[in-house]
Structure formats: structure tokens, C-alpha cells
Image (cartoon, rainbow, N blue to C red; front, top):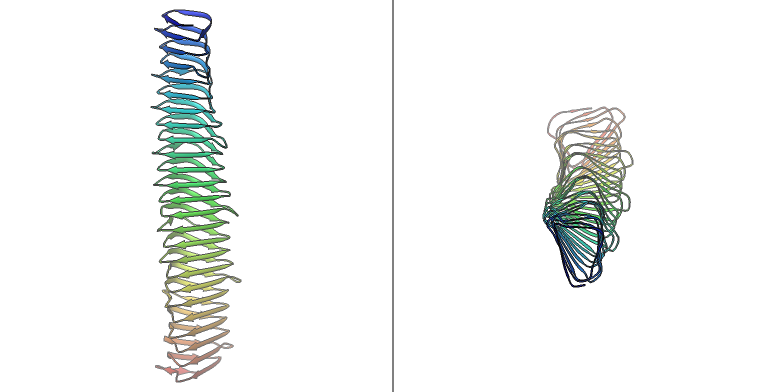
Length: 440
């Protein structure tokens, strides 16, 4: 119960310590029971179980343990190796050392300096990993805290409070059911969220499945698909997504970019951001503040564009509503309810098969109507082809030819036409002017 040194020697039974024990120079113990006091092992081996009780101190520098059960103060340093499992219920430091089995923590665990764990089960308490590796699964249970600074995990399952920082890397999948922050770090597999997920500072995810809860991405990237399920909330500020499928509440802000397609089935706001592929809407879509879409397919629901641009074709299907206030479209094909207001511009052609209002806006190509077309408040059309239905122009202009086909109705009140060819029912009233020829 006082002081014992074991130097280049062996014990075939159990070594029990309640004093000061020094084991060194390739000594070999069968089992170690450190009940109290201090045990120091240097470049030696415990073939079986090493137990460090509450109130005791165990320092292992180099060498090897069969397994370790710690309820006191313990450390593994200098490439110490545990060939089996480690259980920590108080305070354990693993420094530049390795555990071949499962490391289970319910106390305070510190892993640092290129330490290597096979698997980690952080059941409660706090585990902090710095520039180290968990080759397999790292599990952080409800009520536990896991901090990973640099290094690598095989995969992560989190139900507590967890963070990945300083270029930490997860080689496989991440599942978050509570609170996870990914800061300047990466996940090579799928990140699945049902809690609160924060991704920031140039973090890189392969794919994101936001099944419920809230995911917030700031200046980060999802290389592949980001999916936001019904009932979930996704906020993307800056950064980049490969594609987005939204059935919940989602927003793209601060010059966020989607390099592929966007599909919205619920509520999506695109604010000062861009989509390089096709944006398909069947819910409520809000596009504002100089956002840029490549193409828009508004299949149902409502799409509202304010001061923004669709480079290519904008399509508004039967039953859908499209409102464009300012900004620019490449072209417009409308079979639903649509309006162009506040100096909106269409660089190409417009085709209307249902109801379209052009108010103080312009169309650089041909406007073709087979439904109900209302043009008013100094709107400017290049040419008008009213094939059927009704077109009403008030105080507006057609620079070139206006054609009104058999069975169609054209009413021009004020404004100006370049020329008029009429085979249907047409009227010019309220000082309307035709600068060229009229054929009736």
C-alpha cells in the first residue's frame, strides 16, 4: 500500500494498487486493479483488463492494455495502445494513442494529437476530439456533448449537442436528431437532419436531407442534392447547392447559387440569388431583389417575381398564377393567370392561351393571343398576333404590325399601332393612331 516498482518484470496474477505503482521497461502484467493512489505504466503491457477506480490516477505512456475501465483520472500517451474496449466514467485523456475497440464515455473524454479510436460511443458527459480520428461510427447520445476539432470521423450519429470545426472531415454519413454545427468542415456522405443543423464558413456537404427541424447554411456548399421535406425549414445564405427539392419552407438569400434544378412544392423564397437550371413550382414561389433564374416552369400554385430575371423561357401552366413586377423574362408562355407590371420586359415572344395583363411593361418579340389579353398604361409591344379570344389595348403601343384573325376581337383605346390587319372584330377608339396601313 506504499511504493512498488516493476521494472522489466512480470506478474501473472492481478496487480492491485492503493499506493504508488511504477511499471516500466517492457514489464508484463496480467491484470491491473488501480483502486487508489497512482499507477504509472511506461512502455509496458497489461494483457487483460486495466481498472482505474474513482479517486485513483493512472498514467499509461506507450505500451499496451487489453482493455481499460476508468472511473478516476487516466491518460494514454506516447502511442499507448488499447487492443480492446475503453470505458470512461470520469476523466480520460487519449493523446497520440489508439483504441482498437469501442471507446464509451460518460464523463470527460479528451482525444488529441493524432489519436486513433475505432468507434466512439459518447453516452453522456463531454467528449472533445482534436486532430484525431474515429475510424468507424461516432455516436453522441441525448444529453451528451461532442466537439470535433479537425481530424476525421467514419460517420456521425448525433442526438445531443455536437460540433465539427477546423476542417473536421466525416468520411461517411451524418445523422442529426438534436443540435449540430458544421463549421469549416466537410461530410462526404449524406447529412440527414431532424433537429437543428447549422452549416457555416465554407463547409462542404455531399448531399443534404433535411427531413424535419431547421437547417441553416451560410456561405457553404452542398455538392449534390439538397432536399427539404414537408414540415422542415431550410435557410441558405450565400454558398452553393447542386440542386434543391423543397416540400417545406425554404429560402435562398445573399447570392446563394443553385447550379442545377430547383423543384418547389410548398414555399420557397429566392432573394438576390440564382438558379442555373430549371425552377419548377407547384407551391408558392417568391423571387425578388435581382435574382436570376435560367428557366421557370410554374406548373401550379403562385409564382411572384419582383425586380428579377428569367434568362430563358418562363412557362405558366393552366391553373397557375404568375406575377412579374419589373425585371426581365426571356420569353413567356401562359396558359393560366399572368401579369407583367412595373416595366417588366420580355426579350423574346409572349404566348397567351388564357388570361394575361401587360401593364406599363414591354415585349420585344411577338405577342400571340388565343385567350384574354389586356395591355395598358403605356405598355409597348413589338408585334401583336391576336389569333382568337379578346385583346384589349388601352393607352399602349404596338410598334409593328397588329393582326386580328377571324373569330378574334381586338379593341384599341388610345395609343398607337404600326399597322393593322383585321379579319375579325376590331375597333380603334379614344384617339388611337395607326402610323401605317390598315387592312380590314
